[in-house]
Length: 187
Image (cartoon, rainbow, N blue to C red; front, side, top):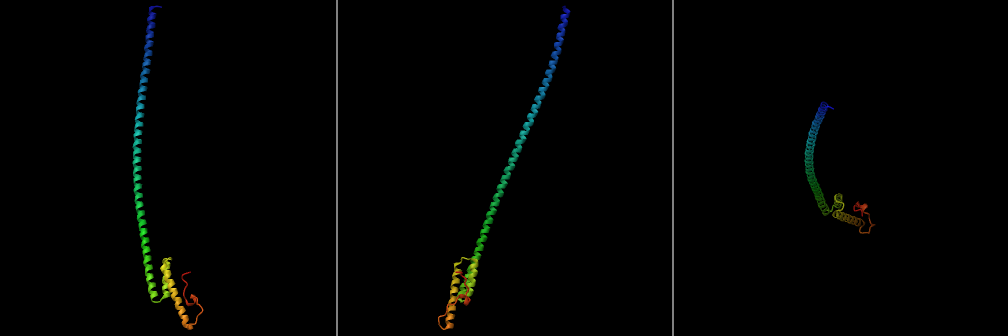
């Protein structure tokens, strides 16, 4: 082989090496561009993720603040409702007490009437008024006592009338219905 041929082959090899190195450099540059683009994309994605995280945190804080506000409003409404319920309860209790006082005043007035009627010997009227008392207070011992006293007086009067009519001759016992004395005690 001659020298020229060797030089030619060396030059050819150098030229092939230059072409290969050029291609490798081109690939390396493309690889660098891809890596730079990938790094930029990664930074962009990371920034978006950070922004989304920040937005989620802000939204969570906003929701928590709204929930706290709603809780406070609900507690305030419950406190107001409880106060109103207590006030209504007190008003109802006061109304009941007032009604009880009115009924007791009416009973006292009726008792005074029965006392006056008994003093005037109006026994049937006393019985009628005592029955009104029992309508207001079915357990009124005073009304029951008035009825018993008035009934006893009416029986006594009836017995005296029978004695007067018969001239002291013992009479056949007369039932209260016969002398128009109502049996009001139910005993």
